[in-house]
Length: 139
Image (cartoon, rainbow, N blue to C red; front, side):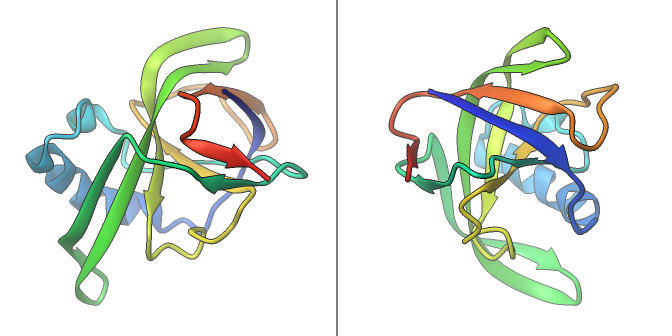
């Protein structure tokens, strides 16, 4: 399945959160988590909307510190089989990252992606994400 979208700025909270969370994801066994950049790239797919079909990885009731206190949260991940940006293909680059308590969780046209550092992108750049069928369902 191909997901097309463009980069939009987020709320600037992921950088702080991911610095702490990625250590937990490594401990939980999420492949590649040790290489994650401390931040996400927000991809808007408007006007197309999606709902979650299934996750490649789902970690439930994960305790983590979120300012100002600890909390439990579910985290879902969908493998990005291929990411294309600026005509460059990145195989198995990272994941669509779905923290269930994020304000974005119920947003059907915006996704956060997470992976190793990706250079030379700016607001409104286009992205193509290839994921396995059934992970997201087009509405």
